[in-house]
Length: 319
Image 1 (cartoon, helix red, strand yellow):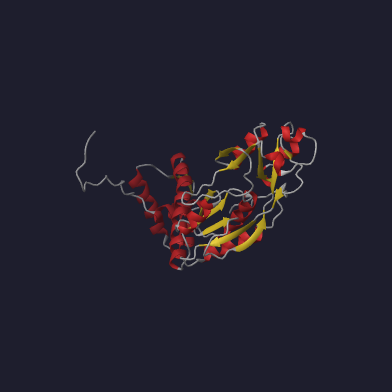
Image 2: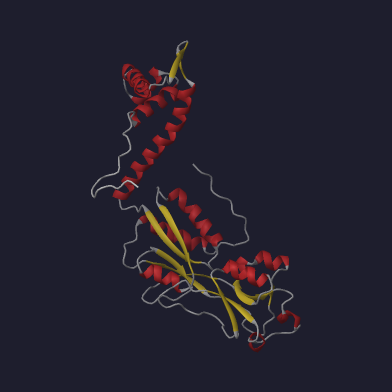
């Protein structure tokens, strides 16, 4: 392998010979139907427009236009290049807009960490509504479990956090509760008892629990009285295990609606504690000033938190 000495730089990408202004000029000639019309639209002289396009063809070494009667018509190569140039010019304009918005305090990115048990359908609605207002601001979404959300927020890695865990030192906006249901496969021994169940009935059965993704002080949440316990890394894996007849678990109802409907999972007939409704909260990074994009996203997350999960979602039309 060829070695490079310290300080030796990788070669830079070759600078383009054609400028964005030249591509814009070509687009104007095509879109407005000729050199004179393009000159009027660009508030330039016709000779300046003609020279710009001629210079482009010379620099590229490819004919872009041919004269058909009195009208300039794209060549096959010109058609391909013009089509690609439109995206290039659009991206450059968006980059300039983003720089302008950043100068005004608009964030380039909002980092959101969410507990995996929170309904993703509500996130989709909120983020879809955010897109047309984002002004190019990106959202970086991260999923954690239990105290993993708390650690990411406290480490300053997130701007916003959604969690059912009470995070010390933070005041959160109250969101809705998420229902967790005790379930097992319909043929599980607990269902075969054919009666109302108590916690003593669960003690001898295998319980499937979700691993806390936090590292510093992982938490055990909920009833953990079973003598046998398997720990898995995700709610989806837990649902698969329980749906295959391996143990029982408390799982978010919104994640297992199909399995309940199809009879793959069945709620346990508990005398008490068969369902739980932990409240979720929306926290923000207290060590960082919230920019306008973050504030808009907070409002949307709160508004769509109460949206029904069973209503079909229609994505907004893209501009």
